[in-house]
Length: 311
Image (tube, rainbow, N blue to C red; front, side):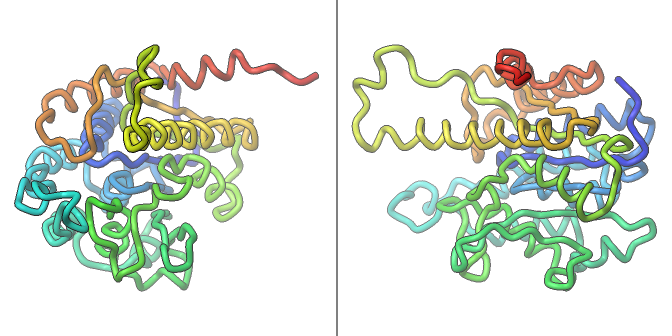
C-alpha cells in the first residue's frame, strides 16, 4: 500500500447492512497501519450506513469494533415483525427506536460540535435530505447551524431510508435520496474549500458497500411489467450517481491522492438482508485486500481508460 499523505480523509457510501463490508475492510487497514484510523484521519464523510461508520471513526472506534457491532445488531436494527411482514401495506418497515439505540451505543451522547471542539479536531460531514425544503443538508461540526444537533439524531436522519424507516422530525430522510450516496466528491470539496487542505498533500480514501451484479438479462426488458421497472431503473440511477462522484473528484482534483475502493458483489444483497453476515465479512476481507494492494474500483478505472481524451 502506498504511503498516505499528510492530510487524510475518508468517505463511506450508504448501503444498509452492507456497511459490514467496509467495517471489516477498515479493520484490515488499521491492522496494516498499526493503530486506529482516528490517529491519522481528520475528515470523515458518510451517507446512511456510511454516516454510522464515519462518526464511529471520529469517536475513536476501530473497524474491528464496528464490524462486531454490525454482526451483533443486524437482527435488532432490521427485525422481522408484523410491520415488515405487512409492508407495503404499512407506511414503513421498521421502527426507528432500535436503530436509535444502536446508534447511541456506537457514537454515544453529544452534539456535532463536539467533534470540532476535540483536540485534535475532526471534521465529520453527514448528508441528510430535507423533504420539506427539497434539498440535501450537510451537517458539519464547525457550522453554527448544525453544531448543536445531537449526533444520534443526525446519523439517524442520514440512515432513515424512505419506506424502511419513518422520517426524523417529520422531514429528514436518508442522504442518499439526493446525489450523495457516494460522498467522495463532497469530501474532496470539504477538504479543499472548507479546510484549506492542499490536494497535493491530501489522501482521500473512498469506500463503496459493494457493486451490484450485472442487471437484466437479454430479452428480459421486453417482458417487464410497468411496476417491475422500478428496481432496475432505481438501481441504474444510484449506480450512475455513485460513479459520477468518482469522475467529478478525478476531474476537478487531479493532484489529490484519490483511491476509490469497491468490491463487486456476485449476488444481490438487500440493505436489510441480515442472512448473509458471513458472506459480507468475506466481501470485507476481499475489499481489505484491495485496499492494501491499492487495487481501486476496476469498473470505474476501465471506464476512465476508455473515455476519449481531449487535446
